[in-house]
Image (cartoon, rainbow, N blue to C red; front, top):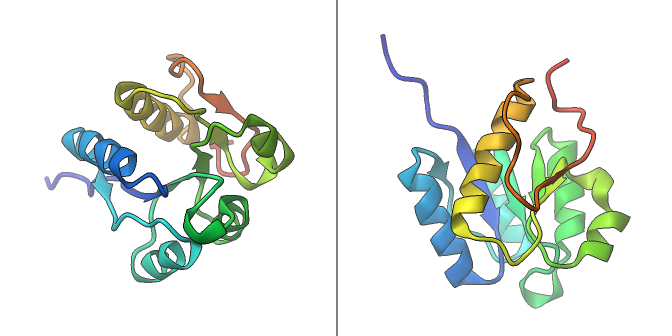
Length: 144
């Protein structure tokens, strides 16, 4: 019996050091993290090559790119999005483009727990609570 393929995650974050720290922590937990993106088009180019199971998207990206626009595009492609941003008012105004949000600042451990929780949530498993700060929205991706 072969092991299942690891879940694939796209991180779109203009704070590169933060993105690398989260990437390393997720990879340590067995996730596969795609090429880090700091702009909308970089993220779309990556998705054109490899479809992620989940995208972590900051609302403000490099060069004034809008992460909410990217999130709506990814959601339309069937890719669940979690906003990773400290801009709670922007998250509220565009929450239909994502399944959840994890506000900054967050610890790397909490982000790993949030990703674990989101995958369980998408599979219909609500047996354990999510980490502090994670806000889950209604989702067309969740198991019925």
